Length: 335
Image (cartoon, rainbow, N blue to C red):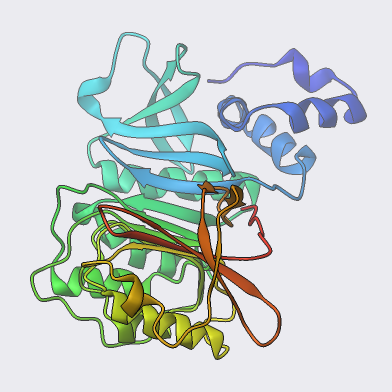
């Protein structure tokens, strides 16, 4: 792609505004037209980008930008077999890269003999073009290597980590590696199943949101060491006695950042749940918004108050034993 673009003849101020309003995929596409285009984008683009760059793997590797509930796909790394008669070759960091423009989806699709190497080249190109780091990774068991790769390629830590594919079962080393070595400060989500008899004996990192599909391995000792705003266990082996211990821990000032805890308990027992705790039943309808903007409606709830005046509401669902602890006031984390 070596053509002279009329856009480059536009005066500085309007050109800068045009570039600021262009989508990321368009900017990447424009940058591949010539070295001059690349230099113009690096010079004129907005210096502060409030979108986060994600590197992900599903069927193929791809890069995308995220801003809370919005996202823009930018470029895909696929195999050579995906090349078409519309495929052209462009230069990218000294590499001759096969590229097809997917006009229907508005994204760039690159073609590689080695897709992993392609992902790394694409990531280097995009991060250099916008002068940013990777802030989120999405991977499955096969691609856990992405954790160490991102950790080694940049000084700043990722903020969001998603381990996908609920059909997978992780090994002990793999799950420990995710829990211990993913320095995500905002969100860690784990969908695959744990190995049989898995135990995690280390302290959890401080994190805004921890979501685990199968948290049957999480013990009360694990729970007491978690420092998070939002903790969600879609499956757990915690009992009503365990939750009672956690509530007393919170009342004593533990887990000070907690805003939402949800889990499925084993054999929900209200007497055991609230043993030696003063609670007030509130039967009015209330709505609660979690830090990640999940909305809950409570038709009833049991309120308990800490010595500093902070109130938490405990709501449960029968017959599945689901329990929610919501701490007031609500906060929303924008990432």
